[in-house]
Image 1 (tube, rainbow, N blue to C red):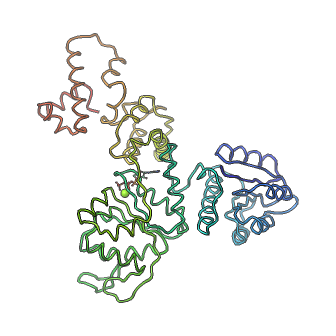
Image 2 (image 1 turned 90 degrees about the vertical axis):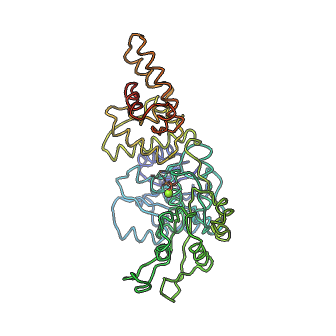
Image 3 (image 1 turned 60 degrees about the vertical axis):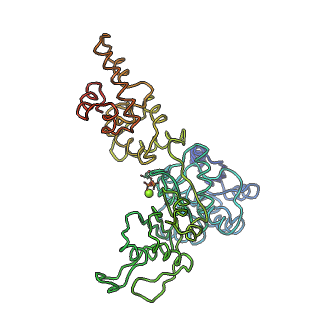
Length: 462
Ligand SMILES: Nc1ncnc2c1ncn2[C@@H]1O[C@H](COP(=O)(O)OP(=O)(O)OP(=O)(O)O)[C@@H](O)[C@H]1O
Ligand SMILES: [Mg+2]
Protein backbone atom coordinates (compact mmCIF):
# COMPACT_ATOMS: atom_id res chain seq x y z
CA UNK A 1 0.00 0.00 0.00
CA UNK A 2 1.28 3.48 -0.87
CA UNK A 3 1.55 6.06 1.87
CA UNK A 4 0.46 9.60 1.16
CA UNK A 5 0.62 12.62 3.44
CA UNK A 6 -1.85 15.41 2.74
CA UNK A 7 -0.84 18.81 4.06
CA UNK A 8 -3.62 21.39 3.93
CA UNK A 9 -4.88 23.84 6.51
CA UNK A 10 -8.39 23.71 5.10
CA UNK A 11 -9.80 20.81 7.04
CA UNK A 12 -12.54 20.06 4.51
CA UNK A 13 -10.23 19.77 1.55
CA UNK A 14 -7.92 17.53 3.54
CA UNK A 15 -10.81 15.33 4.52
CA UNK A 16 -12.21 15.12 1.03
CA UNK A 17 -8.86 14.28 -0.50
CA UNK A 18 -8.21 11.76 2.21
CA UNK A 19 -11.49 9.95 1.57
CA UNK A 20 -10.98 9.96 -2.17
CA UNK A 21 -7.44 8.61 -1.99
CA UNK A 22 -8.33 5.98 0.59
CA UNK A 23 -11.05 4.77 -1.74
CA UNK A 24 -8.42 4.48 -4.44
CA UNK A 25 -6.25 2.20 -2.39
CA UNK A 26 -3.81 4.55 -0.71
CA UNK A 27 -2.88 4.76 2.94
CA UNK A 28 -3.52 8.38 3.82
CA UNK A 29 -2.44 10.66 6.68
CA UNK A 30 -3.29 14.34 7.00
CA UNK A 31 -1.59 17.30 8.59
CA UNK A 32 -3.14 20.75 8.96
CA UNK A 33 0.05 22.76 9.28
CA UNK A 34 3.67 22.74 8.24
CA UNK A 35 4.73 21.92 11.76
CA UNK A 36 2.40 18.91 11.98
CA UNK A 37 3.58 17.76 8.58
CA UNK A 38 7.20 17.67 9.70
CA UNK A 39 6.17 15.74 12.81
CA UNK A 40 4.35 13.17 10.70
CA UNK A 41 7.38 12.84 8.46
CA UNK A 42 9.67 12.21 11.36
CA UNK A 43 7.70 9.18 12.55
CA UNK A 44 6.40 7.70 9.29
CA UNK A 45 7.84 7.28 5.85
CA UNK A 46 5.72 8.43 2.93
CA UNK A 47 5.84 7.74 -0.75
CA UNK A 48 4.32 11.07 -1.54
CA UNK A 49 3.31 14.38 -0.01
CA UNK A 50 0.42 16.35 -1.41
CA UNK A 51 0.98 19.81 -0.05
CA UNK A 52 -1.04 22.99 -0.28
CA UNK A 53 1.17 25.89 -1.27
CA UNK A 54 -0.35 28.38 1.15
CA UNK A 55 -0.24 27.27 4.74
CA UNK A 56 -0.74 29.33 7.87
CA UNK A 57 2.66 28.71 9.38
CA UNK A 58 4.75 28.22 6.26
CA UNK A 59 4.43 27.52 2.54
CA UNK A 60 4.75 24.62 0.13
CA UNK A 61 8.14 25.77 -1.05
CA UNK A 62 9.67 25.63 2.38
CA UNK A 63 8.23 22.20 3.02
CA UNK A 64 9.46 21.02 -0.34
CA UNK A 65 13.01 22.16 0.41
CA UNK A 66 13.03 20.46 3.80
CA UNK A 67 11.56 17.24 2.47
CA UNK A 68 14.04 17.03 -0.39
CA UNK A 69 16.86 17.46 2.08
CA UNK A 70 15.65 15.14 4.83
CA UNK A 71 13.54 12.57 2.95
CA UNK A 72 14.73 12.50 -0.65
CA UNK A 73 12.85 9.28 -1.37
CA UNK A 74 9.52 11.04 -0.83
CA UNK A 75 7.87 12.68 -3.83
CA UNK A 76 6.21 16.08 -3.47
CA UNK A 77 3.23 17.49 -5.34
CA UNK A 78 2.21 21.05 -4.58
CA UNK A 79 -1.40 22.24 -4.71
CA UNK A 80 -1.98 25.87 -5.33
CA UNK A 81 -4.80 28.30 -5.78
CA UNK A 82 -3.26 30.26 -8.60
CA UNK A 83 -1.96 28.92 -11.81
CA UNK A 84 1.32 30.72 -11.76
CA UNK A 85 3.76 29.31 -14.28
CA UNK A 86 6.81 30.96 -12.73
CA UNK A 87 6.05 29.47 -9.36
CA UNK A 88 5.49 26.08 -10.98
CA UNK A 89 8.83 26.19 -12.72
CA UNK A 90 10.57 27.21 -9.53
CA UNK A 91 8.95 24.42 -7.52
CA UNK A 92 9.81 21.83 -10.08
CA UNK A 93 13.39 23.02 -10.21
CA UNK A 94 13.49 22.59 -6.45
CA UNK A 95 12.47 18.98 -6.88
CA UNK A 96 8.66 18.97 -6.76
CA UNK A 97 7.34 16.26 -8.99
CA UNK A 98 4.42 18.29 -10.19
CA UNK A 99 2.01 21.02 -9.38
CA UNK A 100 -1.81 20.92 -9.35
CA UNK A 101 -4.02 23.95 -9.40
CA UNK A 102 -7.34 24.37 -7.62
CA UNK A 103 -10.12 23.55 -8.26
CA UNK A 104 -9.06 19.95 -7.86
CA UNK A 105 -10.31 17.31 -10.26
CA UNK A 106 -10.24 13.73 -8.95
CA UNK A 107 -8.99 12.22 -12.20
CA UNK A 108 -6.23 14.74 -12.52
CA UNK A 109 -5.12 14.21 -8.94
CA UNK A 110 -5.09 10.46 -9.26
CA UNK A 111 -3.22 10.66 -12.51
CA UNK A 112 -0.56 12.96 -11.17
CA UNK A 113 -0.16 10.92 -8.00
CA UNK A 114 0.23 7.68 -9.84
CA UNK A 115 2.73 9.14 -12.25
CA UNK A 116 4.70 10.65 -9.40
CA UNK A 117 4.84 7.40 -7.49
CA UNK A 118 5.85 5.50 -10.57
CA UNK A 119 8.60 7.92 -11.50
CA UNK A 120 9.82 8.00 -7.95
CA UNK A 121 9.96 4.24 -7.88
CA UNK A 122 11.74 4.01 -11.22
CA UNK A 123 14.30 6.51 -9.99
CA UNK A 124 14.84 4.71 -6.71
CA UNK A 125 15.34 1.42 -8.46
CA UNK A 126 17.67 2.95 -10.99
CA UNK A 127 19.94 4.30 -8.29
CA UNK A 128 19.75 1.06 -6.40
CA UNK A 129 17.66 2.15 -3.44
CA UNK A 130 15.42 -0.76 -2.52
CA UNK A 131 11.77 0.09 -2.94
CA UNK A 132 9.67 -0.15 0.19
CA UNK A 133 7.73 -3.31 0.77
CA UNK A 134 4.05 -3.33 -0.04
CA UNK A 135 1.84 -3.70 -3.03
CA UNK A 136 3.91 -3.58 -6.17
CA UNK A 137 1.95 -0.76 -7.78
CA UNK A 138 -0.69 1.83 -7.25
CA UNK A 139 -4.18 0.69 -8.09
CA UNK A 140 -4.15 2.75 -11.22
CA UNK A 141 -1.14 2.26 -13.46
CA UNK A 142 -1.25 5.26 -15.67
CA UNK A 143 0.35 4.30 -18.91
CA UNK A 144 -1.93 5.48 -21.65
CA UNK A 145 -5.01 3.62 -20.46
CA UNK A 146 -3.10 0.44 -19.83
CA UNK A 147 -5.46 -1.92 -18.06
CA UNK A 148 -4.31 -4.14 -15.25
CA UNK A 149 -6.50 -7.03 -14.27
CA UNK A 150 -7.06 -8.59 -10.89
CA UNK A 151 -6.04 -12.17 -11.57
CA UNK A 152 -2.86 -13.68 -10.20
CA UNK A 153 -1.53 -13.66 -13.74
CA UNK A 154 -2.05 -9.92 -13.96
CA UNK A 155 -0.32 -9.32 -10.68
CA UNK A 156 2.63 -11.34 -11.89
CA UNK A 157 2.63 -9.47 -15.19
CA UNK A 158 2.57 -6.15 -13.41
CA UNK A 159 5.43 -7.21 -11.21
CA UNK A 160 7.51 -8.12 -14.22
CA UNK A 161 6.72 -4.86 -16.00
CA UNK A 162 7.57 -2.87 -12.89
CA UNK A 163 10.79 -4.77 -12.40
CA UNK A 164 12.12 -4.45 -15.89
CA UNK A 165 10.91 -0.95 -16.79
CA UNK A 166 13.57 1.13 -15.05
CA UNK A 167 16.41 -1.01 -16.43
CA UNK A 168 17.87 -0.87 -19.90
CA UNK A 169 17.35 -4.58 -20.50
CA UNK A 170 16.12 -5.76 -23.86
CA UNK A 171 12.83 -7.55 -23.53
CA UNK A 172 11.18 -10.27 -25.57
CA UNK A 173 7.39 -10.23 -25.43
CA UNK A 174 5.64 -13.37 -26.52
CA UNK A 175 1.97 -14.16 -26.78
CA UNK A 176 -0.85 -14.88 -29.17
CA UNK A 177 -2.12 -12.18 -31.47
CA UNK A 178 -3.98 -9.41 -29.66
CA UNK A 179 -2.78 -10.30 -26.16
CA UNK A 180 -1.32 -6.82 -25.69
CA UNK A 181 2.35 -7.13 -26.61
CA UNK A 182 2.53 -3.64 -28.02
CA UNK A 183 0.50 -2.30 -25.10
CA UNK A 184 3.01 -3.81 -22.69
CA UNK A 185 5.94 -2.47 -24.70
CA UNK A 186 4.46 1.02 -24.37
CA UNK A 187 3.79 0.51 -20.68
CA UNK A 188 7.42 -0.44 -20.15
CA UNK A 189 8.55 2.61 -22.06
CA UNK A 190 6.26 4.98 -20.23
CA UNK A 191 7.27 3.72 -16.83
CA UNK A 192 10.96 3.84 -17.67
CA UNK A 193 13.40 6.66 -17.34
CA UNK A 194 13.23 6.99 -21.13
CA UNK A 195 9.60 8.04 -20.99
CA UNK A 196 10.33 11.50 -22.33
CA UNK A 197 12.24 10.01 -25.24
CA UNK A 198 10.54 8.57 -28.33
CA UNK A 199 8.73 5.24 -28.51
CA UNK A 200 9.19 3.98 -32.06
CA UNK A 201 7.34 0.90 -33.23
CA UNK A 202 8.49 -0.97 -36.29
CA UNK A 203 6.54 -3.74 -37.92
CA UNK A 204 9.15 -6.22 -39.11
CA UNK A 205 6.42 -8.44 -40.55
CA UNK A 206 5.66 -6.07 -43.38
CA UNK A 207 9.24 -5.18 -44.28
CA UNK A 208 10.42 -6.16 -47.72
CA UNK A 209 13.97 -7.37 -47.95
CA UNK A 210 14.97 -4.40 -50.09
CA UNK A 211 13.59 -1.81 -47.76
CA UNK A 212 14.57 -3.31 -44.43
CA UNK A 213 18.10 -1.86 -44.43
CA UNK A 214 17.09 1.73 -44.96
CA UNK A 215 14.13 1.42 -42.60
CA UNK A 216 16.44 0.31 -39.80
CA UNK A 217 19.56 2.33 -40.52
CA UNK A 218 18.42 5.14 -42.81
CA UNK A 219 20.26 6.20 -45.93
CA UNK A 220 22.04 9.16 -47.43
CA UNK A 221 20.75 10.87 -50.51
CA UNK A 222 22.13 9.00 -53.52
CA UNK A 223 23.12 5.90 -51.52
CA UNK A 224 21.33 3.77 -54.11
CA UNK A 225 19.14 4.29 -57.14
CA UNK A 226 15.94 5.82 -55.95
CA UNK A 227 17.45 7.29 -52.79
CA UNK A 228 16.47 10.82 -53.70
CA UNK A 229 16.52 12.15 -50.18
CA UNK A 230 18.25 11.46 -46.90
CA UNK A 231 16.26 9.16 -44.69
CA UNK A 232 16.58 8.71 -40.98
CA UNK A 233 16.31 5.10 -39.87
CA UNK A 234 14.27 3.78 -36.98
CA UNK A 235 17.29 3.36 -34.74
CA UNK A 236 18.13 7.01 -35.07
CA UNK A 237 14.49 7.97 -34.64
CA UNK A 238 14.33 6.03 -31.41
CA UNK A 239 17.53 7.52 -30.04
CA UNK A 240 17.12 8.28 -26.35
CA UNK A 241 13.98 6.17 -26.22
CA UNK A 242 12.65 2.73 -26.99
CA UNK A 243 12.56 0.84 -30.27
CA UNK A 244 9.80 -1.74 -30.46
CA UNK A 245 10.35 -4.42 -33.08
CA UNK A 246 7.10 -6.22 -33.79
CA UNK A 247 7.01 -9.65 -35.48
CA UNK A 248 10.73 -9.91 -35.12
CA UNK A 249 10.82 -13.53 -36.26
CA UNK A 250 10.15 -12.31 -39.79
CA UNK A 251 13.48 -10.55 -40.23
CA UNK A 252 15.79 -11.93 -42.87
CA UNK A 253 19.08 -13.45 -41.84
CA UNK A 254 21.09 -10.54 -43.35
CA UNK A 255 19.17 -7.98 -41.40
CA UNK A 256 19.55 -10.04 -38.27
CA UNK A 257 23.32 -9.92 -38.73
CA UNK A 258 23.27 -6.16 -39.18
CA UNK A 259 21.04 -5.78 -36.15
CA UNK A 260 23.40 -7.81 -34.04
CA UNK A 261 26.21 -5.45 -34.94
CA UNK A 262 24.22 -2.40 -33.91
CA UNK A 263 23.03 -3.97 -30.70
CA UNK A 264 26.58 -4.89 -29.77
CA UNK A 265 28.31 -1.72 -30.81
CA UNK A 266 25.51 0.73 -30.12
CA UNK A 267 26.43 2.60 -33.26
CA UNK A 268 24.64 2.93 -36.55
CA UNK A 269 25.72 3.96 -40.02
CA UNK A 270 23.20 5.22 -42.56
CA UNK A 271 23.44 3.36 -45.85
CA UNK A 272 25.84 5.21 -48.11
CA UNK A 273 27.54 6.96 -45.23
CA UNK A 274 30.76 6.27 -43.38
CA UNK A 275 29.82 8.32 -40.36
CA UNK A 276 28.96 6.34 -37.28
CA UNK A 277 26.22 7.69 -35.07
CA UNK A 278 26.09 6.74 -31.41
CA UNK A 279 22.75 5.41 -30.41
CA UNK A 280 21.19 4.94 -27.03
CA UNK A 281 18.16 2.81 -27.65
CA UNK A 282 16.36 0.27 -25.54
CA UNK A 283 15.03 -2.61 -27.61
CA UNK A 284 11.80 -4.44 -26.98
CA UNK A 285 10.81 -7.16 -29.43
CA UNK A 286 7.57 -9.03 -29.88
CA UNK A 287 6.71 -12.23 -31.59
CA UNK A 288 3.77 -14.57 -31.77
CA UNK A 289 6.00 -17.22 -33.22
CA UNK A 290 8.16 -19.30 -30.95
CA UNK A 291 11.67 -17.91 -31.35
CA UNK A 292 13.23 -21.03 -29.89
CA UNK A 293 11.65 -23.03 -32.71
CA UNK A 294 12.73 -20.42 -35.24
CA UNK A 295 16.26 -20.80 -33.92
CA UNK A 296 16.30 -24.54 -34.17
CA UNK A 297 14.99 -24.27 -37.74
CA UNK A 298 17.90 -21.96 -38.46
CA UNK A 299 15.64 -19.03 -39.24
CA UNK A 300 16.62 -16.94 -36.27
CA UNK A 301 20.17 -16.23 -35.12
CA UNK A 302 20.99 -17.59 -31.75
CA UNK A 303 23.39 -14.78 -30.88
CA UNK A 304 20.76 -12.17 -31.64
CA UNK A 305 18.20 -14.09 -29.63
CA UNK A 306 20.43 -14.01 -26.58
CA UNK A 307 21.01 -10.29 -27.01
CA UNK A 308 17.28 -9.72 -27.01
CA UNK A 309 16.54 -12.19 -24.28
CA UNK A 310 17.81 -10.22 -21.30
CA UNK A 311 14.28 -10.47 -19.98
CA UNK A 312 11.17 -12.06 -21.35
CA UNK A 313 7.50 -11.71 -20.62
CA UNK A 314 4.85 -14.07 -21.86
CA UNK A 315 1.39 -12.62 -22.26
CA UNK A 316 -1.31 -15.15 -21.48
CA UNK A 317 -4.27 -15.61 -23.81
CA UNK A 318 -7.41 -13.80 -22.67
CA UNK A 319 -9.32 -17.05 -22.14
CA UNK A 320 -6.87 -17.93 -19.36
CA UNK A 321 -7.18 -14.63 -17.53
CA UNK A 322 -10.34 -15.38 -15.57
CA UNK A 323 -11.98 -12.38 -14.00
CA UNK A 324 -9.68 -10.01 -15.88
CA UNK A 325 -12.01 -10.47 -18.83
CA UNK A 326 -14.64 -8.33 -17.16
CA UNK A 327 -12.07 -5.80 -15.99
CA UNK A 328 -11.07 -5.34 -19.62
CA UNK A 329 -14.68 -5.41 -20.81
CA UNK A 330 -15.82 -2.73 -18.34
CA UNK A 331 -12.91 -0.52 -19.15
CA UNK A 332 -13.55 -0.83 -22.89
CA UNK A 333 -17.23 -0.11 -22.25
CA UNK A 334 -16.31 3.11 -20.50
CA UNK A 335 -14.06 4.12 -23.38
CA UNK A 336 -16.70 3.20 -25.97
CA UNK A 337 -19.33 5.26 -24.15
CA UNK A 338 -17.02 8.21 -24.28
CA UNK A 339 -16.10 7.68 -27.88
CA UNK A 340 -19.70 7.19 -29.02
CA UNK A 341 -21.23 9.65 -26.60
CA UNK A 342 -23.44 6.94 -25.12
CA UNK A 343 -24.41 5.94 -21.66
CA UNK A 344 -24.56 2.17 -21.58
CA UNK A 345 -24.19 1.09 -17.99
CA UNK A 346 -23.40 -2.60 -17.95
CA UNK A 347 -23.35 -6.03 -19.54
CA UNK A 348 -26.28 -8.35 -19.04
CA UNK A 349 -25.73 -11.52 -17.04
CA UNK A 350 -25.95 -13.62 -20.22
CA UNK A 351 -23.30 -11.52 -21.93
CA UNK A 352 -21.00 -11.83 -18.96
CA UNK A 353 -21.47 -15.59 -18.91
CA UNK A 354 -20.68 -15.71 -22.61
CA UNK A 355 -17.53 -13.69 -22.16
CA UNK A 356 -16.27 -16.20 -19.66
CA UNK A 357 -16.96 -19.24 -21.81
CA UNK A 358 -15.95 -17.97 -25.23
CA UNK A 359 -12.39 -18.82 -26.27
CA UNK A 360 -11.31 -15.39 -27.62
CA UNK A 361 -8.94 -16.37 -30.44
CA UNK A 362 -8.30 -12.65 -31.08
CA UNK A 363 -7.72 -11.99 -27.36
CA UNK A 364 -7.89 -8.45 -25.96
CA UNK A 365 -8.17 -6.90 -29.41
CA UNK A 366 -11.21 -9.03 -30.18
CA UNK A 367 -12.83 -8.19 -26.84
CA UNK A 368 -12.26 -4.51 -27.42
CA UNK A 369 -13.91 -4.66 -30.84
CA UNK A 370 -16.80 -6.73 -29.55
CA UNK A 371 -17.47 -4.26 -26.74
CA UNK A 372 -17.32 -1.26 -29.04
CA UNK A 373 -19.70 -2.85 -31.49
CA UNK A 374 -22.09 -3.93 -28.74
CA UNK A 375 -22.06 -0.47 -27.18
CA UNK A 376 -22.98 1.02 -30.52
CA UNK A 377 -25.81 -1.46 -31.01
CA UNK A 378 -27.24 -1.16 -27.52
CA UNK A 379 -30.10 1.27 -27.09
CA UNK A 380 -30.91 0.68 -23.43
CA UNK A 381 -28.78 0.63 -20.31
CA UNK A 382 -27.64 -2.98 -20.51
CA UNK A 383 -25.86 -4.77 -23.32
CA UNK A 384 -28.07 -7.69 -24.39
CA UNK A 385 -26.92 -10.97 -25.82
CA UNK A 386 -28.13 -10.02 -29.27
CA UNK A 387 -25.61 -7.18 -29.44
CA UNK A 388 -22.80 -9.74 -29.59
CA UNK A 389 -21.62 -11.30 -32.83
CA UNK A 390 -23.03 -14.72 -33.49
CA UNK A 391 -19.87 -16.70 -32.86
CA UNK A 392 -19.82 -15.34 -29.32
CA UNK A 393 -23.49 -15.24 -28.42
CA UNK A 394 -23.83 -18.93 -29.17
CA UNK A 395 -21.51 -19.52 -26.23
CA UNK A 396 -24.22 -18.30 -23.89
CA UNK A 397 -25.36 -20.85 -21.36
CA UNK A 398 -28.87 -20.61 -22.79
CA UNK A 399 -28.77 -21.28 -26.52
CA UNK A 400 -30.37 -18.52 -28.54
CA UNK A 401 -33.17 -20.69 -29.81
CA UNK A 402 -34.16 -21.57 -26.28
CA UNK A 403 -34.01 -17.95 -25.25
CA UNK A 404 -36.25 -17.13 -28.20
CA UNK A 405 -38.69 -19.82 -27.15
CA UNK A 406 -38.73 -18.49 -23.61
CA UNK A 407 -39.47 -15.02 -24.79
CA UNK A 408 -42.30 -15.91 -27.14
CA UNK A 409 -43.73 -19.27 -26.15
CA UNK A 410 -44.84 -21.20 -29.17
CA UNK A 411 -46.95 -24.34 -29.14
CA UNK A 412 -44.78 -27.40 -29.49
CA UNK A 413 -45.22 -28.74 -32.97
CA UNK A 414 -43.23 -30.99 -35.21
CA UNK A 415 -41.92 -28.14 -37.26
CA UNK A 416 -40.40 -26.42 -34.23
CA UNK A 417 -38.96 -29.65 -32.92
CA UNK A 418 -37.28 -30.23 -36.23
CA UNK A 419 -35.97 -26.70 -36.27
CA UNK A 420 -34.56 -27.08 -32.77
CA UNK A 421 -32.73 -30.21 -33.78
CA UNK A 422 -31.34 -28.49 -36.86
CA UNK A 423 -30.29 -25.55 -34.76
CA UNK A 424 -28.40 -27.78 -32.37
CA UNK A 425 -26.67 -29.61 -35.21
CA UNK A 426 -25.71 -26.43 -37.03
CA UNK A 427 -24.38 -24.73 -33.93
CA UNK A 428 -22.37 -27.76 -32.97
CA UNK A 429 -20.69 -27.94 -36.35
CA UNK A 430 -20.18 -24.19 -36.61
CA UNK A 431 -18.34 -24.25 -33.31
CA UNK A 432 -16.21 -27.15 -34.42
CA UNK A 433 -15.07 -25.35 -37.53
CA UNK A 434 -14.63 -22.03 -35.81
CA UNK A 435 -17.63 -20.49 -37.62
CA UNK A 436 -16.20 -21.02 -41.04
CA UNK A 437 -19.44 -21.41 -42.99
CA UNK A 438 -17.88 -23.07 -46.01
CA UNK A 439 -16.38 -25.77 -43.85
CA UNK A 440 -19.58 -26.11 -41.83
CA UNK A 441 -21.60 -26.66 -44.99
CA UNK A 442 -19.19 -29.37 -46.06
CA UNK A 443 -19.38 -31.15 -42.73
CA UNK A 444 -23.16 -30.92 -42.71
CA UNK A 445 -23.20 -32.19 -46.25
CA UNK A 446 -25.27 -29.33 -47.63
CA UNK A 447 -24.28 -26.44 -49.87
CA UNK A 448 -23.47 -23.00 -48.52
CA UNK A 449 -26.69 -21.47 -49.76
CA UNK A 450 -28.74 -24.10 -47.97
CA UNK A 451 -26.73 -23.52 -44.82
CA UNK A 452 -27.44 -19.80 -44.98
CA UNK A 453 -31.15 -20.44 -45.45
CA UNK A 454 -31.24 -22.85 -42.56
CA UNK A 455 -29.32 -20.47 -40.34
CA UNK A 456 -31.87 -17.83 -41.16
CA UNK A 457 -34.72 -20.17 -40.33
CA UNK A 458 -33.32 -20.91 -36.89
CA UNK A 459 -32.41 -17.31 -36.13
CA UNK A 460 -28.71 -17.81 -36.57
CA UNK A 461 -28.04 -15.13 -39.13
CA UNK A 462 -26.93 -12.63 -36.46
N1 LIG B 1 -3.49 -4.16 -20.86
C1 LIG B 1 -4.17 -3.51 -21.81
N2 LIG B 1 -4.83 -2.38 -21.51
C2 LIG B 1 -5.53 -1.71 -22.45
N3 LIG B 1 -5.65 -2.10 -23.72
C3 LIG B 1 -5.03 -3.22 -24.08
C4 LIG B 1 -4.25 -3.99 -23.15
N4 LIG B 1 -3.77 -5.07 -23.79
C5 LIG B 1 -4.20 -4.97 -25.06
N5 LIG B 1 -4.95 -3.87 -25.25
C6 LIG B 1 -5.61 -3.44 -26.47
O1 LIG B 1 -5.85 -4.58 -27.28
C7 LIG B 1 -5.48 -4.33 -28.63
C8 LIG B 1 -4.41 -5.33 -29.04
O2 LIG B 1 -3.23 -5.09 -28.29
P1 LIG B 1 -1.78 -5.11 -28.96
O3 LIG B 1 -1.77 -4.44 -30.28
O4 LIG B 1 -0.84 -4.62 -27.93
O5 LIG B 1 -1.64 -6.68 -29.13
P2 LIG B 1 -0.45 -7.50 -29.79
O6 LIG B 1 -0.14 -8.61 -28.86
O7 LIG B 1 0.65 -6.56 -30.16
O8 LIG B 1 -1.17 -8.11 -31.07
P3 LIG B 1 -0.51 -8.65 -32.46
O9 LIG B 1 0.27 -9.87 -32.12
O10 LIG B 1 -1.70 -8.94 -33.29
O11 LIG B 1 0.34 -7.54 -32.98
C9 LIG B 1 -5.05 -2.90 -28.71
O12 LIG B 1 -6.14 -2.11 -29.12
C10 LIG B 1 -4.67 -2.55 -27.28
O13 LIG B 1 -4.89 -1.21 -27.03
MG1 LIG C 1 1.28 -6.05 -32.11
